[in-house]
Length: 310
Image (cartoon, rainbow, N blue to C red; front, side, top):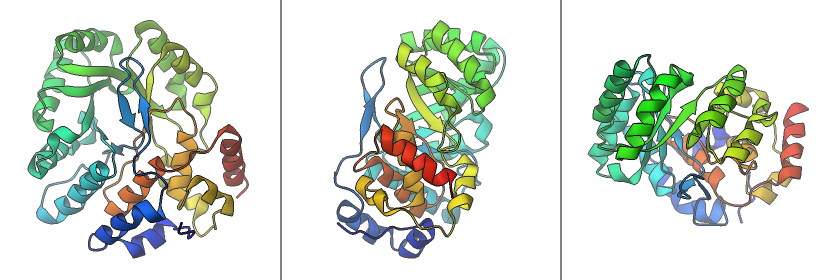
């Protein structure tokens, strides 16, 4: 197995749109030991999801043009070709829902993904109108996952989502937030309403969810999507120019991005991580974190200590 450790800058030199094909043809030999991305179950159904997905905040909020669309199409192709499926978006993310819908339709592979979006408004009728608009923008007759964004008016929307799930309009429903301060509120909703999914922030330097949120998740059988895995990119500032420890090779970790994602995936309660990117080279690097050997609990603490002491 190739033992070189690639930083994201080195990956950029190796890749780019013109070189991605070569790199992708080599990934089974150079990046992982398995040809299949790891999958974990959605506990309410036992359906399994690939552990690396795609977030679209900012990255897909663009005005469409051939130049702008080309790298986003490549990102979506990489997601599918490497075994991923989850695309997470929201009305809050500007044009993102429409861009996802338009591009996946043009690609002719729209039904190959797991679509997750959100309701982000107050009031029953406004919520229904917003969600119906999301269906139109994303060109879906059925949504895989509809989430209550940042718990906005969740008491109202949960009734609609339960009804829509029963009627088959959505397959799953969930709740989301991105702040530590909301974790207690997420726990209360999980305990009271038993959503299929919960989405929240968790990363190698931000482990607040380990205090009690993960315990509540395990107790109630809730599937987990993780946002902000790179702490809005600040983790790469921490590791810029720093060599990776050689023991990373024992876990098929070839870049800092994979290091951070595999730390998260070492927690077996995490169903899927959704890093956002509009760059094919980063998308491919992210996908590779779903392959090969995963760190155990002891190694997770070793990884944390290494980053803490940089």
